[in-house]
Image (tube, rainbow, N blue to C red):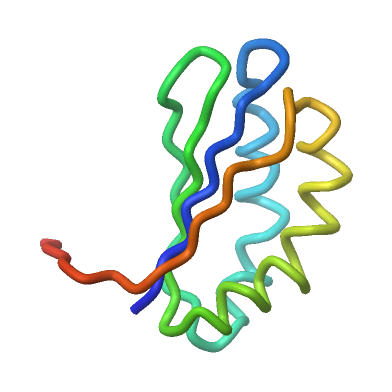
Length: 98
């Protein structure tokens, strides 16, 4: 399992509607991508979120970015940001879930 962690810093307060829209508009496409596991967005400050996406491999995460994320994020999220996202990708080395 691999994860990509994107830290997004916004010019203003986070507009939660943007992420509700992403959830609505991208969910089926994400689920259709073989190897996709989950997508989470955590608001860590008034003007900052962390997106965590899990997939079977790093290649699946790169495909998600290329095929889904770049266009949608570029159109709907990038104009609201205070700079480029901080993107980190790597293998999951420990995990506990219910």
